[in-house]
Image (cartoon, rainbow, N blue to C red; front, side, top):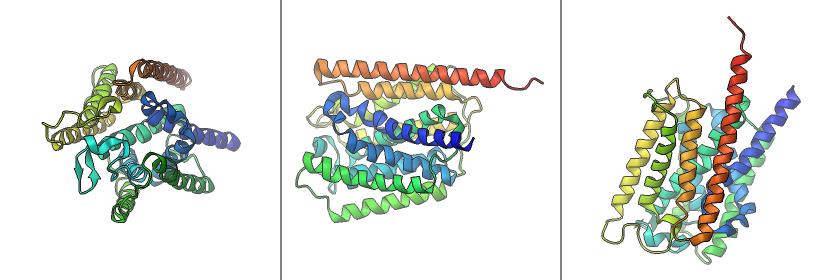
Length: 339
């Protein structure tokens, strides 16, 4: 039995390593830039090992979704601040052209990436893993040795972004040392908050929507509204989303309000006793479809075809998971002792 449990844990760990870059990048950036698939070997250590490390740290600390969010923020700073250095670069991804740039920091770009990485790199893959491997939902996947290897791989992943992707996409740029120190300090503070302060906290319950399908619409609308205020759909080159007549701080504040309201609602819904996997699947499905569709504009027939195929694959995979969850629940009910 111990061997079977070990195999299940290792299988779950490797599944998360693969799932994280799929959810974050290959269903998003690859719609507009198919060459993203070529960069997959560089993405797996950062996304896969990084998200696995976050999940393992939170489980060991007894934390929940607030801890995952805090470490997701740290993850984003590690990727875009230390690795890609896109948070301070004036040329990377043309972000400075559509971003509120303050004291050399791309604020709008940072907030957009927070939404993408916290939700699609961390929260959604971990949530899906809980449904794929429910027996290990609150258990570590790795022992100490595996955790150390994962941490090393995550650090190497950040280095790979810096010297593999950033060096070719933004040659010659070096982030200011002061900014790197600030990013590293913030990562450390967020780690302490996530693992020492947040575990054990919970929110008050709020009645759920009458049907889970409404959570799909909510997930899609929140995704499009949050991203649409911050970045050009399809990452088309050009200026700010709303032109030069709208102060850049206004869309940023609007997205902050949407993000805060979404987090508050989801925490309260999740505290409702009726919250279950059906609600989670509809929420994930709506967010994932909108996440992929957001990249279509400006990329012609190729981008549209890629997005349609990607969305179809997402929907089919979630339908398969929904059937598996229903079968598991039915088996649990039918196998329960009669009273």
